[in-house]
Image 1 (cartoon, rainbow, N blue to C red):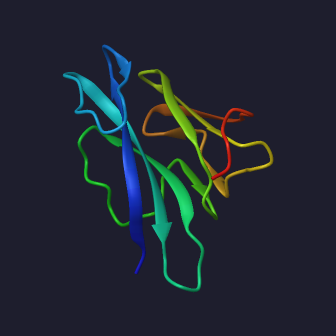
Image 2 (image 1 turned 180 degrees about the horizontal axis):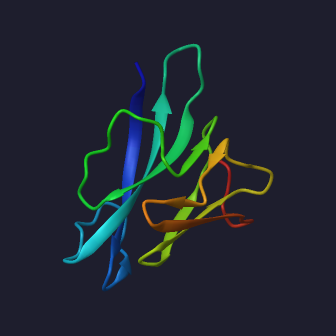
Image 3 (image 1 turned 30 degrees about the vertical axis):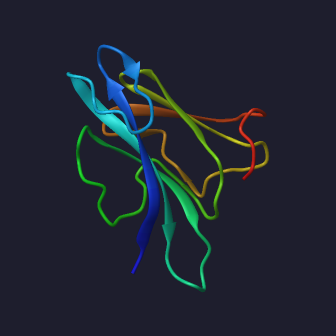
Length: 118
């Protein structure tokens, strides 16, 4: 059974943009991006995933709805506006699943030299 190995929340506030990882949601927050790794057992590698959820929603045992990469990859994730999420990864990486929009949030993807491999 798939398990989310670790996760961190990047919170979106309509008033303040992105909050630091793990910080409580600011009043008025609408959505959050949850970056997590899934480990499906000894015969498969970890996968890095991102889901866009209503603020405070529980991360369910489902694949990421915005981004999936078939192995571990470092990501840089930020909210550009309350309805625009930016996800960057090291050059040469591409997600197996890169959704252009999730629940009214436009998602942009980019290779970024400043995002380093683990």
